Image (cartoon, one colour):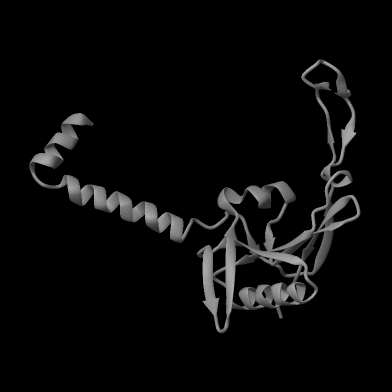
Length: 171
């Protein structure tokens, strides 16, 4: 590697090589690779994700006092609400973006928090007409994996002690 870099430097190609690397990195940030295995919703469907976990070991405080025993079932929604609604969409599909914008506007009217999460397209802040939207991106498909999302648009919201996942057909 050192020899290659010396060669690039001596013939003036090092700076060009560094510029190419920087350009590729910027491109991957501005337009990340789409989440794999995601298709467009064909049939409306609602299903639920249970976030309950079973402790695989005792949890103790710094003094060794037992907080929760191994085998205890814990649902994080018993301790904190998920007071947001997320809509997962393909940012390259204008119909899905239109649906997402309307979804966010409807939630904002009711003073609820709503987020647009892209599985393809460019994340960040974009002005659409008179409204500015911020697009999150499900990098490496971590949320899609966690919640079993393989079709979009999909809406996530809390329903009691579960997370509801609603797959919506775009008309």
